[in-house]
Amino acid sequence: MKLATLLEAGRPDGRLVVVDDDLHRWSPAGAATLQDMLDGAEIARIDEWQPFESSACASPLPRAYQFLDGSAYLNHVELVRRARGAEMPESFWTDPLMYQGGSDSFLAPAEPITGDPDWGIDFEGEIAVITGHVPMGATRDQALKAIRFVMLCNDISLRNLIPNELAKGFGFVQSKPACAFAPVAVTPDELDGWHDGKLHGILRIDLNGEAFGRVDAGVDMTFDFGQLIAHAAKTRDLAAGTIIGSGTVSNKLDGGPGKPVADGGAGYACIAEQRMVETILTGAPKTPFLQPGDRVQIWMEDDAGKNIFGTIDQTVRAMK
Amino acid sequence: MKLATLLEAGRPDGRLVVVDDDLHRWSPAGAATLQDMLDGAEIARIDEWQPFESSACASPLPRAYQFLDGSAYLNHVELVRRARGAEMPESFWTDPLMYQGGSDSFLAPAEPITGDPDWGIDFEGEIAVITGHVPMGATRDQALKAIRFVMLCNDISLRNLIPNELAKGFGFVQSKPACAFAPVAVTPDELDGWHDGKLHGILRIDLNGEAFGRVDAGVDMTFDFGQLIAHAAKTRDLAAGTIIGSGTVSNKLDGGPGKPVADGGAGYACIAEQRMVETILTGAPKTPFLQPGDRVQIWMEDDAGKNIFGTIDQTVRAMK
Image (cartoon, rainbow over all chains, first blue to last red):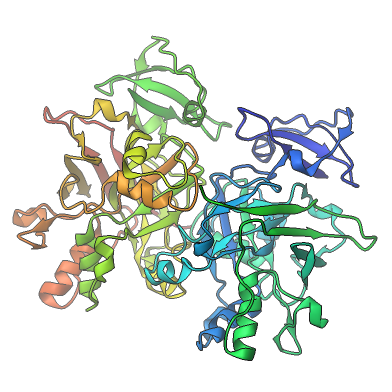
């Protein structure tokens, strides 16, 4: 099943609709909101089909009770550290990095990213899942069974605010503003690329209409979603509607950092990574972070070239 | 106005009720849930009064879209650092510490705290507020005007998991499980002790029926709630229903750490702080963290000795 949430004035949780496989049409769903459905309400297929437009959509959960974002592609973590001359601790291979992210109001998939360019605005292309209830102490297998939907995420990051904020020791607050999700949430059974607790397939990222990333979400993922969820549930239950993110998708090339798409590589799912590779190779970053007017698009296609989740399509706007 | 949420099977957001000033009776409220009210639904006073019991209550917001917890009582931060021989950075006096906490399902005020005693289970007595919508970049004054309700919080912490988790650099996930709030949320206009963006009054904490803390929430609070909210809103909007915590209430004594209640001091709002003072004075902590069967009670009284928010009254239970 594919579901989306239409923006509706005065309804912070929007209106839940069923979307056809081609993302051409939508039809009303019985449950009022996706959270209602996750809480146990039934979906009805009403068969009153209307044309589907991504621009009319909110994020599938316009607001959620929880967003925990992992960092499962360790190549990304290694690169960040290598660019500043630091080793990655051995424990990172067995103990997932994860932070509690903001979830009170996600941006719509076509909503502008508003901020001060001095903050160092960056995108991060990620895979995410929505879980049902997960009991404290759940195993990886129990966790995998609790996955209800798969989504794509743009986890927006303010790079220039991160070093000072992380140095304080309490994680991200100001440096991770509201993120966005692709319009359509898809049940795992409808995804050919869903196996081993991972979504296999190319995550496509364009920056200003040019290919920036063509990274495979199914490889180089050290922790699968079962492991990430079990990590999150070690000391507490996770309520239905919890979103778990994969962290920035990141591929190695011959055991080292990848190359830009323009040079025949898979590219990157965030600007920071391209800057780190530039720093490693030339001593300094070259690619700037996002500026007002810049446009980022994130999507995934199936083997036949069909868009699976719809497209995150955001433009940067300077803060007033 | 005083509001509470009654536990109701099959309704994760419970049932909103109006509570009388003495916390003796409740009456149905028009809005279905506290979040509905924060989203704009009207409250009706239906005048069908019934006896109020704390044990029938959920936390006022049984689940919330956001919980950001500050660390506004710097005495607590200084003590934590001093016990391990570290200085507190100067910037901590101007740049609030804050972390994104879990908010997907809070414990009810009388619900057991379930966990592994080896985790080092501790309570933290805090003041918290619920905000309406706060726009990005809000000033302290705008932030103060957005405060809708004041609450008391038990921010449960797993002390033995904190050092390793914070060393990873991404803040708290496993070491901060679900916390609990006192049964009744109170509008600021009904609180005699609410001024200067702080709640003035003695936060009372008993451990196993003995006075453990009698700390004044109105003093030694370096950042008021307006400053904490403005910090949180620097780079993003805060949705209606955001909870902002004060961090562990902590009083100085003559410019240094306070004394236990048994020694004539104000005591502490968490066990860790008593252990730190023991470590500073004798080289080693003496008081153990919570064990199965231990009971913690947290409440606040007005000048006439009347309970304002009801009591958080939790017993520790070993994980199965």
